[in-house]
Image (cartoon, rainbow, N blue to C red; front, top):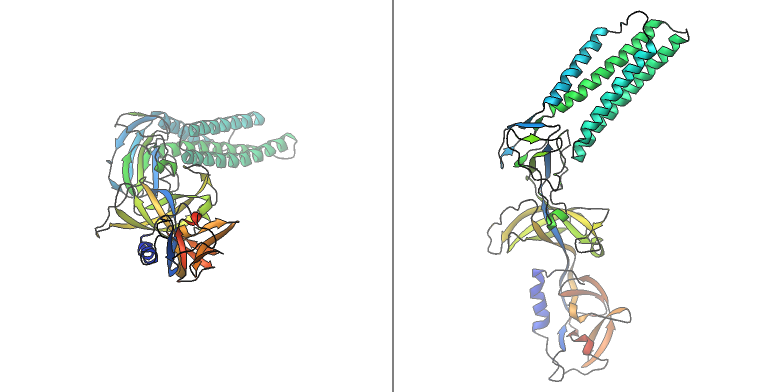
Length: 447
């Protein structure tokens, strides 16, 4: 029964159980008290540390080495999806694009024509060599991007381009070998080699252009801007992944991370140097706030989607917020308190103070405690939690019948902080020992 909170709605019920019937058992046993089983509502609540989350967040990083040419927004600005936020100047990237464009134009002008006495095998080797160099350079550029999502997006593009080229190269090789065996005309081999060259040049141009296009940083999601990336934190917010997206992160693109990268907090002045992967801006969508709670393995099987909860924030003392469970992670995580825990994701509602005033809207990353109401029994036979003890491996209660104590085995149901539902063994109205159960013996007399 440990680890549950004190539901406010049960305070009055506990007073009813104890106020009229609780009494010490004389001067000889001042630490033993009696009460009565009663019908009431019993709620079981699980407490869990949590952190406020944004709907989604994206960090935009520099896709290449260069300088910050323009910054078109200020911290706190509300931006729309697709809006231009900043521009990176990268002479090296722009030079590679010009060279790729020249190579593409040359391949198109060649049109498959080769001079007399052409070495077909030599042309194929040179084409394959140029393609391999282009793919290697693209992978090297991707390796400079520290954001895993952006790096993976570029590498996927490179892998796709390489597979397409391999198909064209195999066709060209088969055509060259057919000519060498005398089973095909020279024109077919020249046409296949030309197609491979054009494809290689087009892919090199596309990869170079993708990098240059990414120098214009656009908001991948709507939200509020802050400079740099997400600051690292040793707080519960960091431990619980406070900025992970509840509603699904924005799809990553080159230079845009699906989630802020911890440990990076850089504000770059216009004209300042940047390297590939440098965090420039973070956009946070706070249109819908949520929570990520860490529930111990001993309690998580009681948590289900749709359950209601109340929330207390360290930053809003005295305020209570509403929340509802959206999902429960299948895989565990290391608990901040030690042991194994599971992350429970909730939608966060509004809050208010005890006097009815509206509570302020939280900010992503704020620490919280979630009170999850996991079970409730209405019109249940209940006794104070202190009345239940363990004996011979069974739950038991001391029932007073005809002025004498009798140990009765019971079956418990919903277990609240103050009250426990008794499914069988005790009936409403029966007198029970509610304090000092370890001091009572079978047959002990009570007034």
